[in-house]
Picture 1 (spheres, one colour):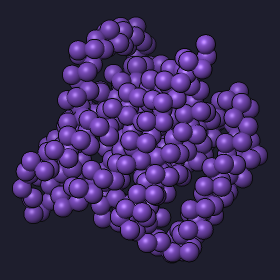
Picture 2 (picture 1 turned 90 degrees about the vertical axis):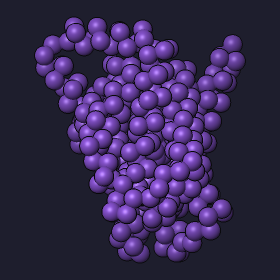
Picture 3 (picture 1 turned 180 degrees about the vertical axis):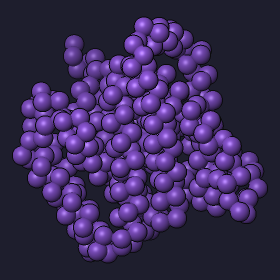
Picture 4 (picture 1 turned 120 degrees about the vertical axis):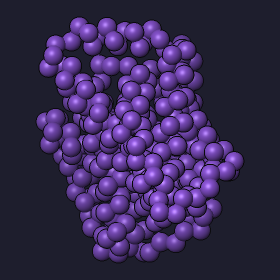
Length: 317
């Protein structure tokens, strides 16, 4: 019975990360528009969709969460508000940076950042949450540092943007660990609503000095980006997590950046150097080393964190 139970969940998990793997297509279609303008409407469209879904289909979860907050102590409530606002801000920074990286630097830089992200999250978990790491995981972290050094010797700008994308999402995931007792969909809806409240008054700044006319092409691709590449894979990912272990979904997570690399080189004809190619290979090896002994890692509680949003986005998102 177990295979018949988990097969749809495997399919959902794989589908979610395959969808995120092709996110460069809608972003590249919007390359003529300012990154801030793309961010503004992506957040707006996503939060409207999530609000509709929450109010129409998840009212019970919303009411349960409100009751949960009412019963919380003042300190717990303050921490909830702090981490929720912080999570919304970090997600906004992550989305804006990733959009800029894909459209104005290259796709491979964004892909590299999401290969780094789980390693960065592990380091932050160790530093901030005191989560233990095994010897092979420290080795993986060391190899990741070497990979970053190689990328930095070739082009420091690419490395800095990779770290900004990776760290903003890693910090976001840490805040989500601290809010793990709350419904993920309702929480994300609230975070995006707060994010839009913060960036809403800044539209003139986000749209740049030379505003581009917003036409059907723009809104069609924003709709695709928000519905198909943000909200849909989010639900598929959460459905997968109902039955699959976080370690399993953590392995599936690497489908995303690997497809990003494939799209970058095979479709958009991006070029790379031998140094960067070696760096990408090293980070890939470090990921394999980090994921050795999944059962042991699960027991210790320091496994990979699964994106509650699509980034690569929601990630990358």
